[in-house]
Image (cartoon, rainbow, N blue to C red; front, side, top):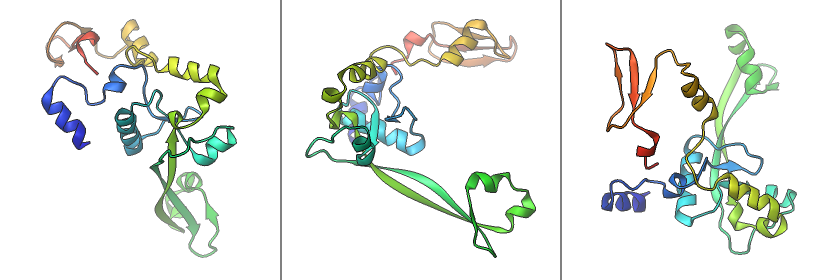
Amino acid sequence: MIEKIQQVEDNWQKPWITIAANTRNFFPQNLTGRRYTGGNAFLLLFLCEKFQYQTPVFMTFNQAKEAGISVLKGSKSFPVYYFLFYVYHKETRKKITFEEYKALSREQQQEYNVIPTYKYYSVFNLDQTNFSDVRPEEWEALREKFRGGQAEQPEIDAMLEAKSWFCPIREQQGDRAFYSPLADYIVVPLRSQFVD
């Protein structure tokens, strides 16, 4: 991160994550397409930037093995973490899932202990594997998925196009975004004005 801050000081218009700015939907995800969230997403994005990975796809060693992929010799993993909640009954010690716990009434929840903890896994980027050799068609499809263009948000784009917001949104050339309470509309700069 310090390297990125120093680079940004040299050119204040340069995006923090250039690889994400120059690609489409470049958001860290696992091999099945599930996106990483929170700090994991942020750190994996910086990792992609630092090592110039072609895709933001990550997996554990075992996930790679199960998929018939080999991690390349000398590749170094990166830790990702997950918060977990162990929930058990105070008297019977019977365990239940956190989802089951959340579905209980307040009185019933008082009968359980909830212990927050976290677990971490070591992940590798797809570039650190033989995926491109073993599954060349899938590799090209993944690279195409993340190649060039602005990030897409189909739901938001559809709402903008249909003008189905509670308050109208106007895109126009400018150097700021604002809400006009007098006219009751929002003004945002043109998409082409954003570098990332």
